[in-house]
Image (cartoon, rainbow, N blue to C red):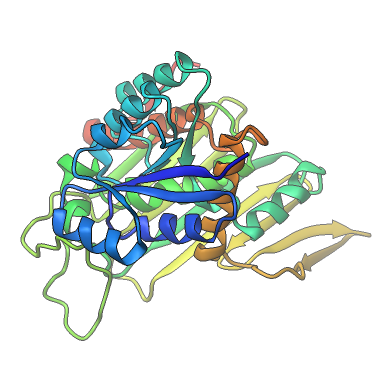
Length: 355
């Protein structure tokens, strides 16, 4: 089979990871680019040697040569582009989150259902980390037993990217939907993806983007604006599942804390594990507690390696060689969790879901 021809829609910072990975793939060809910013579009096309360029994604989707697309646009456009792509005969890799609302998520799911020749993969890139794959082997073999509790924390002291990330209309929210989606999904995936039963959460807008801070650099979006910010800077939540398991999570763009850090752990009735900042597994043998460190290449998540594995998997799925490990159904369930936390904070009560 000839190489899969791919188009990338949206040329913001995250697109670089997709583009680099497609270029390194032996099975894919980066055939088209699309962005509403013409200057950026033509600059990238010239740099990458891509012939087909579009400012309207509908025109890209009308190109019969394109087999699949990566969606790397603002969150509020993910659903409409994904649905249009599926309806035009393209398979889709959509950056997380799948969309902004449960209603949008269900509409995308329906588009997948009525286009059985295509599929959608959600960009849960941490599922493809070596540390994740190794830990899943231990979990699947029963070494940790029943996973009943997970804890995830992704803290930035100062790290509001500004721009569209800080614009709720385009992003859907702040660190919860940007960072929380990754660590919550990581726990949920390794716990076996139990059905969510209820969520109780809080969001806070106390510090803003802290543009006054001096002598400390942080990532800024291309459209960074120090004045624009209407998203939360901190969120926490407890997520309960129908099997009795739970996840506790806290995430921040801005927080008076000692340092930036990410900590993710899982706990079962036979053992436990920390997966971030570095994989370590805890078990018992002969009435002795053992802490074990696997000898692997990547004890922590490596973004370049993880994205390459994600793209390779996506292309294999387009070719019909594999089935995606991050299907649209997972995106729908995650939107229930994320929007549930926001609703819980707004209404100051626990939100329950129909099982």
